[in-house]
Image (cartoon, rainbow, N blue to C red; front, side):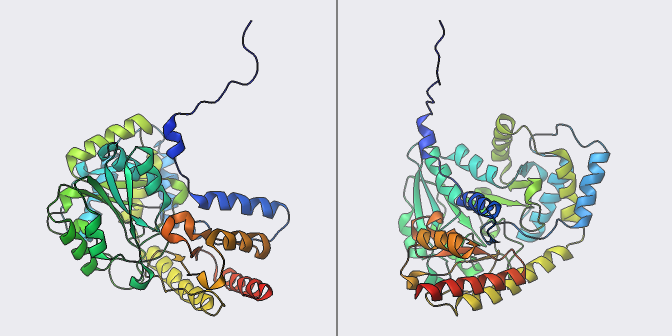
Amino acid sequence: MGRTGQIELRLAERMSRLGTESAFQVLGRARDLECQGKSIIHLEIGEPDFATPSNIVNAGVNALNAGWTHYGPSAGYPELREAIAAEVSRTRGVSVSADEVVVVPGGKPIIFYSILALVDDGDEVIYPNPGFPIYESMIRYVGGRPVPIRLREEKDFAFDVDEFSSLITDRTRLIILNSPQNPTGGVLSKAEIEQIAAAIGDRDIFVLSDEIYGRLVFEGEHHSIMSEPGFKERTILLDGFSKAYAMTGWRIGYGVMRADLAAHFSRLMVNSNSCTASFTQMAGVEALRGDQTSVDRMRDEFHARAKVFVEGLNQIRGFSCRMPKGAFYAFPNITGTGLRSKELSDALLDEAGIACLSGASFGEFGEGYLRFSVANSMENLGNALERIAGWVKTKGI
């Protein structure tokens, strides 16, 4: 007789080291509350609230109608890789060729592939904290040792370079940078990038530079460590279309790196995703080569929203918020409320109908903060401020 009953689920040990991205968990809870009839203002999810520009949509539709619906090269179509190489060459001031580009479905695969390809058991990876939670999750998953570098509010959420230098050891295999930064909205200046490059020196260490928000800098210019002398060959540039072109659902990003490493990333694509959807790549070509005014308008709107929202937060007892320099997040210090981050974010969702994220979900140094996305209408942001202020008042904070 065969065995009856439910078979025991035995997961590999590595699954216990895998984290998550809490934005999607909070979104799920918020949707459940909406199904119960509760009004929720969504400030939790990190995606533009704008539609994909029509010229890009039309390029995707035309590609579908023209038959771009089949497998493509694992590293991406030459047309798109050449467009990306030209864009990166122009914006970072370095010479990039198409064989140094790997196109992937979204930005996360470049994080995963970088860590998979470079980090062995026990190798150390320095990463920003508070920071995008997938960094630490993937480091732990492959058996690496995560080494957080604290982003400090008093430095506009940059980090202390001397402290950073002290964390670099003979076991350091990879350093992750993110600017503009999620969740804080901090931006590394050219001087700070130069100091970081000097601290790394000529060590045999790769840098994963996550620049997915690079087009959303509010003042001045975006700076990349890839542009520093001697760092192009040691930098893996992560960029894509989701944030700048409001293309989150299209699932298209890319990595730029030396050609020999790009070949290994292509192998990882073969083993995981095969290729990125063909028609989205044709839309990506149009995004890079077409009219860019929609990007500028969206950036300016995020800047205006951030100003209004931060000013409003700073009028609420217990909240203190610095003005972000890029991306579309506000990251207020809420220690003045006397509540911990998760306690406050849960209460705002359940009692005030405000979906936001606990700062602690971005790492240990995020405790004492909340993350709000300003990727919502000015009207909804104003309503959110009223709800938060009203809730604080009723609680006597």
